Length: 140
Length: 112
View: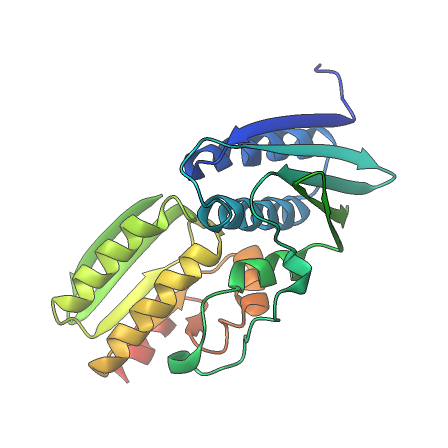
């Protein structure tokens, strides 16, 4: 039986094709710790939205950048930390997405952040030494 | 993600399997828009084997529904797994799409 580690770290390049690698680690790591499918769905979806956002809109140059995702367990809480050197962006400061407008007026921007904010239990953002640091927590 | 589609009477049945995310949404968008642009007005999407949807998937559904509304067409969805239904609720998409539990019900709604 594989040893249960309490933390994992994955580093990816700013390429949408790299996101699946992070999500697979989250799934394997979560399953090892018997995290339910619903909780894992909330975590993978939130991370997917956050990473997609950083990679799609965060960089103004075309160079390769690294994004570091740290995963850990702490007293029944699944903690995720995303660290990137994209332009400063605090997802907690974005306007709440309009999710009750009729179909013709429904804006699509901001939906990913809305999903992440509503599916996680806790989110904290800071900008330190030129890096965005986002903490996401989910009880399981 | 795997996509299938077939015509039954005047209804296009689309089956979607796997993950609908920012990596797979472009090919779903291409197929859906192609079907709509061919003039089909009744589209039924089987979500039973869809395990994952992110905002990129919702974006395609919204664009498809808008394009279809221009020709008075309709999309009906059915078979959503509870976790997928939950994300539809949080995204506020349960109120803008007709969602049914079975293919029969969805088909009836399109024929009404």
